[in-house]
Length: 582
Image (tube, rainbow, N blue to C red; front, side):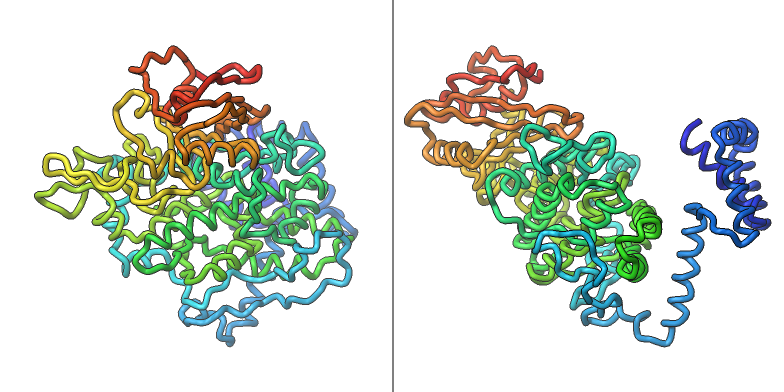
């Protein structure tokens, strides 16, 4: 019996048992239209066999007699809904309902007072009174309204999909930036960060699709994980409490704090880079409207429950994912809002909020990655992407030439286009990987105009189909590289700061004057991340770009890409016992 089957049976029994006649009849009609009733008898047999319906009836009889009884998740949800309704009715005369139309900060609903019964000993920088809402000195506007005043919905659809048969973000993109350390079945034991266990530091991709975006964020997070860079964002104490009590029941030492801070800092950095390329200089952050329910209701209840009362706390924390919401951002646009962020301090505050951290890192599935993509696009602005970034012919100008470029941010196969990956790497949605602008036969081919802080290596350069310029390869500010192999993106980066410094110096000088040994970590977000893939390179001599035509006999595509980066300086590549990826 699948989870869906069990859910149908449980809901049906619950409605019938508790006398919700109208809801029960409506549920029956809906399921009959979908052809579900034929399976109910079998489902009920299975539910009876495992004792679920019997326990329902037993607890229901206790409730009728006024005796202590267990509440079901549906009971908790209904009670929560009633509390929200009563709370909103009481607040109706206040100014709150029109705050999103006023250009000033949204006051905190939850008082930032110390909770005297707090029992969890948190690191000092966690205890910062964070039970507050996403705030902005600017109006928080519906996503559709923002699009209407910034290019319009047709331009938005054209920039994302152009003439794709299915102008939507596919289901496979609906993921968060999640790591397996947050899964009860796969979390590593002991240290919250261990290079030997990628589950503690690697983003896990549930399905194919957003690998290009994930690879950029993972490469950008490496310096916070392994090189000692100070994170821009620290973990919310509310998130720590939730992961420790009720949500995942993690031990405090098992919470992947370095991973969460590194990923959030990589998001911060990505948005900052894009805002520098924006004509407005602002960041436009897309979030689901459920952030209001999350902060107003859940955090208020959470702050009033002693940590010693684990039963109530677990019921509240178990409802977190439902309140985050899972809406389809294109089809259900009314369920998303845009927050204007005009300073790095504002962005830091929003990314430090409990809601954003839950939304970004703890939920599978999630609308987070689609929302992040649209945030980056809106920050660059639709007009800049369409009329400045996309390649154009010399004759017409304007929108991109369909024969020259993929001319949208999603490919025909609904993967990230080169334009979208470039947008995340350096803030401009160009198709080219070369330096600057190249004019060829009346076409303007736009490339990368300044060194990026992470790089890109492509199998197409190995086959001599294109050139990756200095700004994306030898001149990068941090030698962490996104790898493109035909239809999939992964990443590779130095294993520690010493290796990073050696590689940075060698690439900058275009030579390794003496023999150097460095370790690199390879990360594939679609892999189960069960073991670290560590490559050891011996480097000496001039740095060049070697391609297939130079007679390389190696069969591993990872090695092929390393030859385009280090070339003649490679003395040897060892996979340290791991089977090389072909």
